[in-house]
Length: 195
Image 1 (tube, one colour):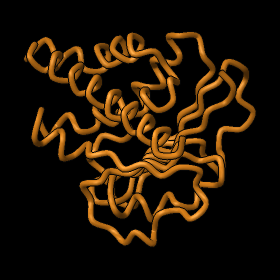
Image 2 (cartoon, one colour):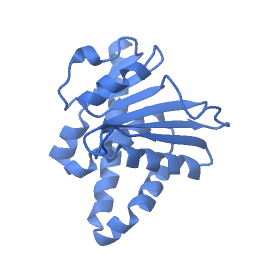
Image 3 (cartoon, one colour):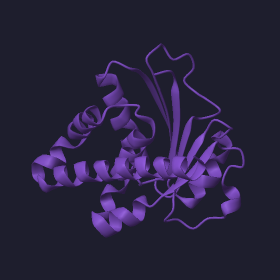
Image 4 (cartoon, one colour):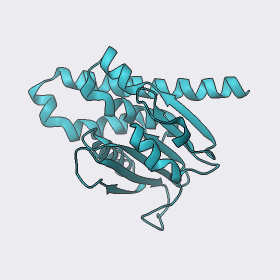
């Protein structure tokens, strides 16, 4: 794996930073080089929250980046805020459950994919695991960490919650699996449509 840069953005309170922390821990446990920089809006809940994450098998030169390989926007405002991190090499992913001006989508991204994470969380699982669906999607789109390493890091992050309510473990693992499958399906459809 060479360097992979991801910008993950959403509203404060959606769990964007938690996903970044789990992915970073998973990468660290797989002996990768990784850097994660959180960026919050003015107010923690209600502002746009962005996580900048880099993964590599070699030393990472700079902590910040201007363009991402993958941008994931989890709200309408996040789409507008992150479009500038795209160029002709960027895979831009947004949640199809949010209303926003389609003009805000980046003009130069290599691929733009919509995934129904919020709708799936609400309909199939539970609204609270929406961010874990997104984490599964990140893994499905990029393979930056193995599914097993992500599960282990998730277990570590939420151990206290899982102990209190063991059903949450299965719910979170299922959310991750669904997100991964959703992303892989979107990529396959993209190949089928263009191939």
